[in-house]
Image (cartoon, rainbow, N blue to C red; front, side, top):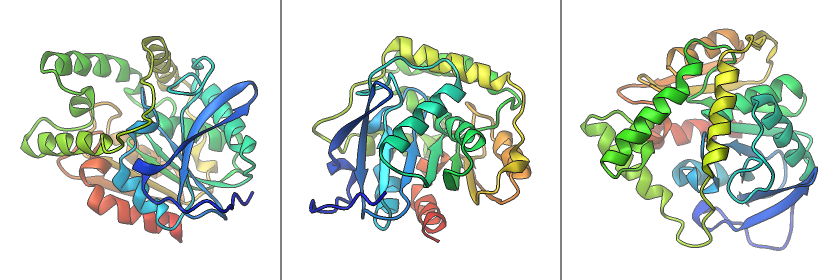
Length: 286
């Protein structure tokens, strides 16, 4: 579908308006920016995240030349409905959203939970996805994937004790470089001053954690069937989704390349956004 129109092209995520579209009785909130036409890049967001949790430096870089769409999963942020308790159901919701927009081919940019949903989408609808970016994520049945909940709750408590954003602990190392990168990342997320999204509700958050645990304990998917060119990236010290799982994805997805950033955690792509954004942009542009 060519979503062209007379409205000006927006290339700043902080300025992108929020739209809604209904699919299967669910109203999905989404934002789009960049030039219309061609295959869009759909962003699949992380655990507990809403539209306001994407790093604008990465989104804006890709949107300079590509049509970018971010969206709230069902039951999250401004999207209606109830959060599913399996990753596979989340993938079907994403499929409903994408097809409601009229697209029959997309590229995917995903992070963390979003990467799990993206994998489930490719497994169920391989014809839909042309290129795949998997960051800070791991495969179904991956080693220690089911421990994400424990790590998450632990870091939420640590953040609360210091009145910090949990992402500072969950996404970044607690050394000098990590702390500096964490503060800068949180500041970038606050660049959008108006029409911000609603935060995820506690029940929805817990349901997402349950789905991740189920995914972690599930039977491994046959990633050898993936034919999509795939870019995999992570930090070398991911405590949420162990970095070895990125290496596992790389071994099992034949048409993949792997980037591991040094001295960084789950949010390695955000800490090294100045290096990663151009790489991801080039990968998705070719």
